[in-house]
Length: 174
DNA sequence: GGGACGATTGAA
DNA sequence: TCAATCGTCCCA
Image (cartoon, rainbow, N blue to C red):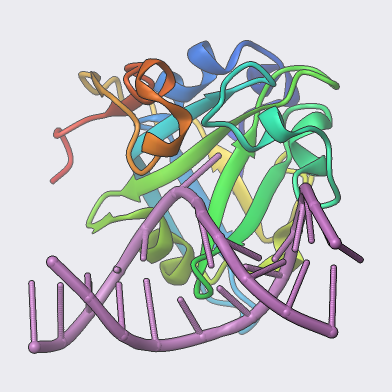
């Protein structure tokens, strides 16, 4: 079923390589009732290391962001605005805190909506995409055209970091 | 213990 | 334009 599941080495690279390559990949999910779904990733954002003031890791390692400091290939899940779960894929090697926020899949735009669609919650914190039986990412064989833009909702990080073109998306699957 | 704030969303 | 809503983190 998951013969094309991405292997750990895919994630153990710089987040600025991993993030754009995740666009067009297929995110697969098996739910508790046995049903399943898969969706093509259409929009992501890269958060890169302790110097990136928009990245949670810039505040130092805490229980909340610990997953981002771990080896790539796991999920970093957090809760914001009192109501939304954010789904992130951890990239790079241990102690290089980098992650990719999944902002949209085909037919569903917005990070909070994606998590609601995929029924993501705290229980997915640090879930391993290489071995999980309920969520993983597959190669789709697709090669969408990728566009870039500044990241959304990070003005608090200052003009330099908020203007990095680290949002990657495609319009190929609308 | 108290308070500020957020990688958002949906409605006014 | 603005309220909803609460976990996390900093300061006292």
